[in-house]
Amino acid sequence: MKKIIAIQADKINSINIKTDTTFQLALEAQNRGYRIFWYEIKDLNLLNKRVIAKADQVKFFDNSKNYFKKINKSNLDLSKTKFVLMRQNPPFNMDYITATFYLEFLKKTKVVNNPKSVRNISEKFYSINFLKMMPPTIFTENIQEIKKFLKKNRKIVIKPIHGFAGKNILFIQNRLNISSISRYLKSFGTVMVQKYLPGVKKGDKRIFIINGKVCGAIQRIPSKGSILSNISQGGTAVKTKLNFKEKKVANTIAKELRKENIFFAGIDLVSGYLIGDINVTSPTGLPQYKELTGINLAKNFWDQLENLK
Picture 1 (cartoon, one colour):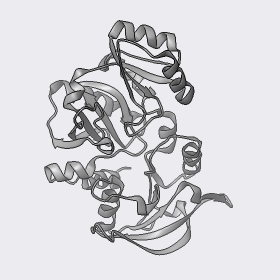
Picture 2 (cartoon, one colour):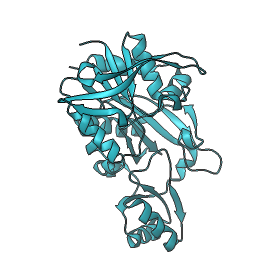
Picture 3 (cartoon, rainbow, N blue to C red):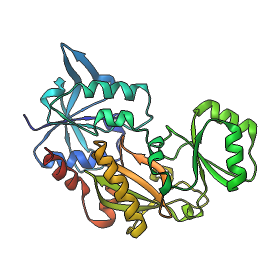
Picture 4 (spheres, rainbow, N blue to C red):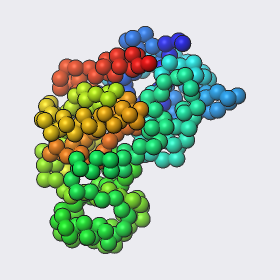
């Protein structure tokens, strides 16, 4: 099989190469001699029993102004590629699900992450398998259950179960605005509701899991007055180490993700507790880790992937 990689992602000209993990993975693959093709979900087709992507062959450059060049566009038979990387950002909607069906049709090509596994693992709801490692948490779209949970815990955080990048997260204390929460639930449906952890002011720890192993972590500090640690929400990455409790939680989750055929994932801990986000669709943070530690986990990613049987 030729050394060809296809990357399913968002528009290539939307990349911020200083923070984009997909770019770092692509650059490392290119350094290893792979030809790289880039396409979006809308470019997928099933023609004559083959999954065909209208893809651009791309060459990448570690240059902030001109970081890529499109060489040519072709109808790429994805069965002829060695790897396909699913790297488009959420939301996890029907387009995303449809793409997993396309990619699941591929039998010999290795797709990362496994499309069936991605489809079956709701990034927040999957955390119900680890409730003992989490702060008090419920899943509901019943406003009365949220009201009772708030009364018991005083301060709570509400997140849409299909939310991403720290968007639409609510912090509530003492009183519930019924009309406001009703509109919120009407918009987002089922939500994750958690007891607020004061330690979030010091940030969360994004932990990188590759092939069932904990490979590193960064700490993300919220901007002043915020509880959101996401880099896209103004958070700042700093160097960190994992303590005994954090390692135990991370290793337990890593072991289970490997059983689920998830090769690359990111999990988030606050004060040693899993806060529900188990990122399997498009894990991020590798450029920040490299900048802080000098370690390029993209090399680890490809070393592990190329040696998979």
